[in-house]
Structure formats: structure tokens, C-alpha cells
Length: 155
Figure 1: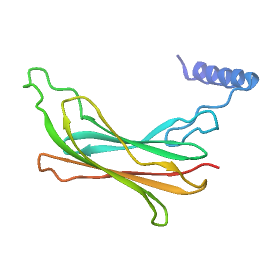
Figure 2: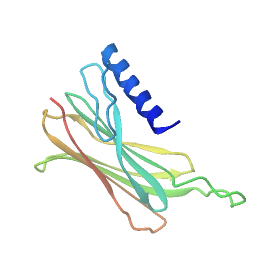
Figure 3: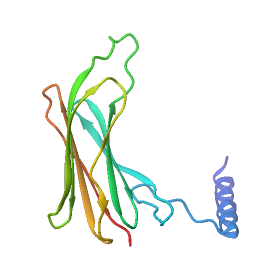
Figure 4: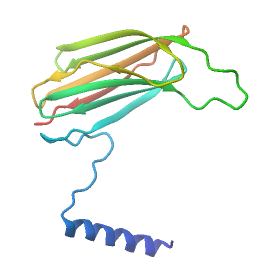
């Protein structure tokens, strides 16, 4: 497609959405929230102990819930030896700005090449509060490189 054709197609699509009364999609790093729906947002990720880690949250008018995920950093190379099971120590902390803690989850898990989930503390938090979660993972003597995300609970 030429640049003019792409521009025309984009304008036509925007006009169709406007006429239909549709709302635009939510950008990554923000949560669409209403009383009926909440969208999970995963805006923090990184390598820790040779594993890919991701920190997600779901925010509603009542509060926020965090989930940590631990998975493979990439597919195994062809012909590489089978992946071994490893012991992974994970810590997920959740705090409200101003020092109040919602709790800490500490777990030792066996990683067998499938994504692990750690449900963190969350719950009812006053609207407008900023809540920060941090996920740290260590395994095989590697140092941890924690990832964090903060969210303002919508009103």
C-alpha cells in the first residue's frame, strides 16, 4: 500500500468508529476500568536469574490486584539439552504510597519450563491512592533484578 492509501484507510476507519460511537482502545500501561469490567495490564517486565519476569495488575474502582509471572526467556535452541527443573525463590510486595503495606508473598517454586504465576496481595484501596508492587526472583545463585509497577486506583 502506498502512503496515501494508508492515510485514507486510517481516516476512513476513524470516521467509521466516530459514526458508530465506538471508543478508542486503551493504550498499554493504563487500565480500562468500570464497575462492570477491569482489564489486566502488564507494563513491567525484565530478565531475572535467566528467566523472563512480568508484573501485571488489574485495577477497579474498589482497589487493585497484582500478579507476577515467571517464564522462559525464549525458546530453547534446537539440539540443546532438555531444560532442567530449578528452584526459584520469588517475592512479590505490594505497598500503598505513604508506607502502608498490603502484604508480601514469598514462595519457593519449582520451575519446569512452564510459566508460573504468583498472586500478590491487593484488595480494597481508597480511590486515588497509588499502589506499587515489586517482583524479585532469584535462582541458581543469580542476583535478583526486581521489577516494579505503580498504579493509581481509579475513582
